[in-house]
Length: 308
Figure 1 (cartoon, helix red, strand yellow):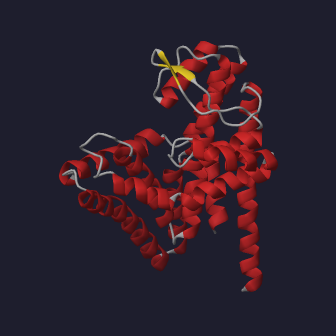
Figure 2 (spheres, helix red, strand yellow):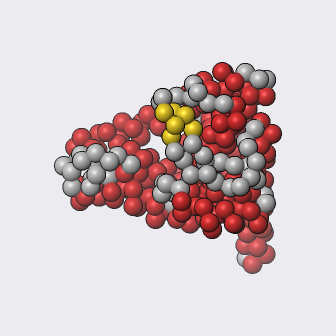
């Protein structure tokens, strides 16, 4: 059942990618602002209450609808799982943006690739070389593949119905909206959201990295994971980026010009400079990892049938 849901959602995202920002991001942003306006008094316990209402409420609603539909009509329950997984993943939009950048670089239109990358990241890219554009695009793809595909999928599999997918998406959003703000107003209030998502994402981020290692250059992926992941900013994606860089044999990280200055970034992997060919390889890495997950789901399903 889970494999069929996943394949259905992947097909939907290829045929009609979800406008993630309009359908998911903006409503969650309004919810986070509403909760912050009502509960943020600068204290950690208020952040806990707001998180419980926001994330817990969404999980209860998703699980309650799934339970009700499962009791009344199994087909409707399955459709509900598909709808929720489709809305909580949103990898199709990231994949589309990445392909547009890759095609622009492949055609030699660096200016267009810079513009597309700036729109995707929300940061200026005017001074980036073609290699730097490719490098940052690969980093964005690897991060998006975890946050909008593998992480959601694993939580969807671990918790009943669509509860896990909703838990992952909502907690990831609040960790970003509240937990990463360093100002005094959000410091203690957002700490619970940040720490809770780190716990939720602990296993998914390592399984994503392991998948990249298995379907890529295993030795280099594990080496980069072990030696370089802890040198990256602790946003939960260091392991994914380090493993992906090693699996591809591409050099990620490194300083880039941004907002009139050169931003210092840790170099990941002793591989080659990023280019369009590596961008194509990164797409292949993500899809091979996804096929690996699908095969594992198929084997688990067959084992449960034989065991039953």
